[in-house]
Length: 545
Image (cartoon, rainbow, N blue to C red; front, side):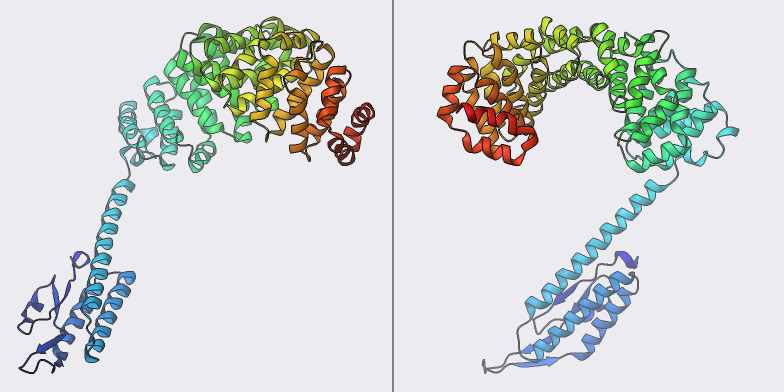
């Protein structure tokens, strides 16, 4: 096999070297020169064996014919190097290193060619049609046993090789044998393997082949089969990802109704509920889907009730709690859904999740975000969250996870919304080290404009009832001024900082501290940069100073 020939070149320095070894097909010996030594050590005679050189060149040329064009160039490079070595010999320059280097280069090229040939064999084997692919066009003519056997073999293949060409085969089988639970299960297992890698070309092929509608149809036909329901949710989740179009397609195919119906039907299956809550959380990012989830069922809000019921029945599962809290958080971006969630026991379910999973920073983060969204522009929910212990739960999460940046941001946002309620303001002030926790977060995350802005809102709302000067004595005024110094271009930090200082300056002890910190330049700069947002509050503080 010419492609596997290992052409070797060896420089012979000895005068007794023989050139008879040229007859070996896998070994080429080049005796470039013959060194003759006589009694006069200073005299050296170099004779060029041109006939041997011609044999070397012809042998290399013959070997190179079996290579493709790329490797012929490499052989030519080696030949040129050898000729240069001969010229150097004629100039009486020692060139053993040069010839050895060319030999090594050629060996490397040949080794790389062997490796590529091996890879080509593997790729060719991988590209061979599987039994399932071979029977793709014949699926309508085959019996169910043959299709089932082909899909069983394909499961082993798709577990390692996720090719988009398999999708058409699998969907074709599932569509033609939709009544067969075994075939649908195997088809969904293959799709789960292929789409689990989140390769865009696979997802695109799946959608183009009407995969979403086929999944929905299978869920309808096999509503009592928990395996099919689990795989269907997993496939939906892989397909929708961050693609808004696919989220709409799932809703149009009735996917939301089917998932919620399955949640009520299989309320004891933890893994299915985890997958279902994850899919609903992702779907609820779309504003239209939020309405659909809330309106599913005979009675309004059955979708929301199903999520909360799953949280109550499986409170020890941190995965389910995280995904369910995420679903409620996204659903709460709709004002009507906020009312439904609170009325269905959503606040208590979220706070229970925070209490059960205090060590999970991710669970605490999502729960704080959900509470912040529920409290947004809804005074009833703010009062409910405060009365059920939401303030203490948020502050506890901030204490336990000081290094979780997103948790601290969502916690400050939740407290800022809750603090607009007078009862909650009192709870924050009376909480053990509550103000100190907020100030510590401001100092740790000075570069976060969101944290600084929300903290200023909290202090501005608490100022009127802070009769004990807790904010002032804990260093709150200094933290506000530091935030304004750091975020000079943030209209939110500047406006809320000026407002917080205005509210705090109404207390004599706080005014003394403000005068000591001397924020005149900062207030003037904020007034000049953002006159509409800052001028009134800044002027009020400057007059008092």
